[in-house]
Length: 171
Image (cartoon, rainbow, N blue to C red):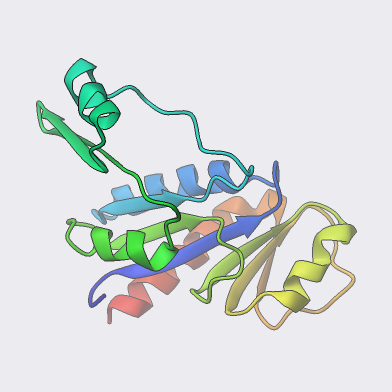
């Protein structure tokens, strides 16, 4: 995956993952970095489908495992199989013009990750997960992670730190 940086943003539901990713996308865009995102829908069921259009829906119903619709420079893709591994999705992203891939979720994967901690009960993630580069917490931590620590109210400082990490990775 030469040239593409992969960073995971992990934490429990309502910990601020999506909001953080939105801020990171904005910061990367300001630096002219193209961002791709991958979100794990960890609710035990399939995510709600976006109906692509009538014809692609007919293709799906007929048994196509992949459908795409292109229009005005926008490409919508839907692919089905029993289970998608993160590596399978990342391989598809290798073909896209992105500089950085932000992954929301997939806690157990081993990419560099930022862990969001809502409360002391969530701190076990810091001990259990691998490759943690930063922790963002609502409250003071009772444990001492071996990574950079940010308070939830230090998002500007975190974004600056994050962008420095991305720039260092490019050098």
